[in-house]
Amino acid sequence: MANTFQLEIVTPTRVIDCGPVEYLRAPSVEGLFGVQAGHTRSMISLDVGEIKVVQDGKDTFYATNGGYADIHPNNAQLLVETAEECNTIDTARALSAAQRARERAKSRTADTDHSRAEAALKRALTRLLVAGRM
Amino acid sequence: MASLKDIRRRISSVKSIEQVTKAMKMVAAAKLRRAQNNMLQARPYANRVRNVLHTLLPQIDRQTLPVLRISEEVGRSLVVAVTSDRGMAAGFNSNLIRRAQATIDELGRDTVDIICIGKKGRDHFVRRGYNVVAEHVDFWSALDFQHAMQFGREVVSSYVGGSVDQVLVVFNEFVNVIRQDVKLEKLLPLAVEAGDNIETAEVLFEPSMEAVVESLVPRHLNIQVWRYLLESYASEQAARMTAMEAATNNAGDVIESLQLEYNKARQASITKEILDIVGGAEALRAAS
Figure (tube, rainbow over the protein chains, first blue to last red):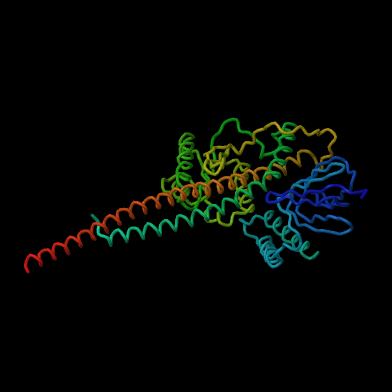
């Protein structure tokens, strides 16, 4: 296998060792970026979003709520607070969370925290997106 | 001497207590294993975040980020006391509460906000009229990283909002199964430790080094809070396990001595009966 690099997704509750992968796509705060073997040494802030990992031509998706990526030419580590695979996501819960967040974002009372409601909505939508990849 | 019936009753009550303590010990042991496992799982993440952060921190201007600000003098403090919801764990809670209270009194109780995690600490400080600003109880059995994130957010927002100048955490550190130490740690302002020296000159930061640090700090704090929760949980279970082990042993000793007393009493009563019979037979023979 020529063009692969080692990928690890490290969360506070577990370490997912993805092994040698061909391609990684992750959400930075400035938009999606892709990583292949031989990437320049970099540190990238990750936003809420979807992580795509390509291994042996097969795609795996994870929902994350942010962290950072530490990238070396032949290995990469994603340090994220959560990483949920599509088959572990509770779709019903994500749906109701999205619904709640939407209502909260819409309400015009002074004490609603709009940025928090929006962040919650984004998280819920990401999880739904990833769940739909199954 | 107590009657045979009384002793029998006491033996059976001590036996049922023994069963309860034995069961509690077993439950605590199982929970302890889980907690230790969680601690192990959290370590790689925590170490890496800390390393990166402490490498980058000296290179940026702290004043640009509110979460990194260092107050010249400390006006108000926030003390987080991590206790358990339940007792039956020897000195686990009382040692911690004593230490927390001493710390708070030293700072001046009017200048301290308290966040109580766990029922025992909450009960103690609320009853004594301390300034408890937030409490989190009844979550230990479903302990999850989400809790750490929630508490972390709370702490950060009161620090960034400027209502407190430092955040102290009092928790039980898990040393090993028979030893847990009460520890006091300063969570904020963030102190700089020596990290692994990562060569940063050739690293591409996106969007910028400051932004990376800014997003790392809350995550670092979350994982610290997570560590406090896990250490405390493991300590609680270990303390309870040890306490219940001792209680089970004591119950065994009590049962043994009660059993001895019971046997003596039984012997005595049998001897007395024989004496009665023999005495009666003697009397009959004398009469005939």
